[in-house]
Length: 111
Length: 119
Image (tube, rainbow over all chains, first blue to last red; front, side, top):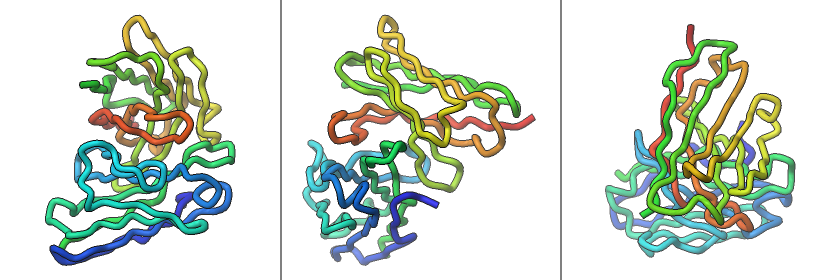
């Protein structure tokens, strides 16, 4: 069981927007603005998409955005494209001894 | 640009020690923290631990008794040792760079290496 809770799957049609949630506690997501999001295509390494809740690394499309409310962080992908189909993982710093926790991952299907 | 590459045996016997090395190329190993993260087949990501360029370490408590991470700055490498492995340790092991140790995100990843624990 992962420390952060994500939906197992989400889907959307090309051009639509989708949101993936990531729920934690006040010891991680809710307590710090240290949430990051990763995209992972099959057989590939994860790729950083969002850091510090809402910052995009250079080269990441502005169709990807992040936000947080309370103990839940969200990743929104607008203008869905076929290439966005992948697994997405959230991560957060935690004040527990574990230091870093991940969500269980969400499989995004572009219909 | 900076690249990370994992290397090591792809097959380890139960009860033995898993040993992997990550080579950092195209940039300096100093001024950053470096992590190991693993992913069992078909499952999610698990943070194993990190090491600073000066050698300070911190491990996931669930693995702490079996994990050792070390760094060799002269070779631009850091390494993972996981002792007393079982089938549950079968996973793709990734090395990754901590983009900012204040905020704990991983901005560069190796391609990963599959380690299977089996006799």
